[in-house]
Image (cartoon, rainbow, N blue to C red; front, side):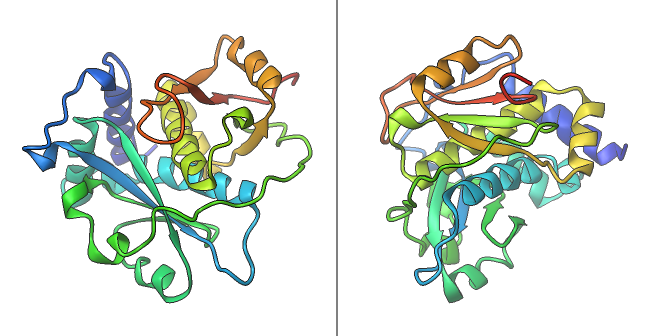
Length: 245
């Protein structure tokens, strides 16, 4: 296990435990206190991707940034994450396509499956121009019927009764993968990284979602309620394996 990974994982665990992000003040008079990780979703108009594939790619991209070995080294990558970890953990998903998607590939972050790229966080006032140009709205994709999740991989369940847009859901599953990684020991997280953070995302009815809530190992994400859903809504649940396995 690389020492840089151990450091990155410890920083993630420290950021995700022992505090409530809702207790951290954001001051509009000091814009640097409003920090966010930006996520670009590649949504070409002529050949739109599968909604679930995009959500899975977004979830994997977020945790890959948090546990990138650069996050455990001195430098701008770790500094950006450290600033974000000290504030409310916001994520903002944006639509990209064609040249706009290509233009953001050179900015520090991780791309998964050419469908989602998560970037190192920044103050919202300092979002790089190629990212700031991307639309936050118009990120929706149709829901789809899918088979069972992967049997031997984590699964993130999304409450489909909340009717979140794909962009909102992408941010929420990113929270899920990040906090799931923080719930693991360093060795478990390292082994997951060796599998490229393989996972499944499934949008499920409320009754199935409620069953997932009852699993002792469940990592539950409750939204602050800034957009689309009511405050403290449970939006996604990360489990080490699918229900019933």
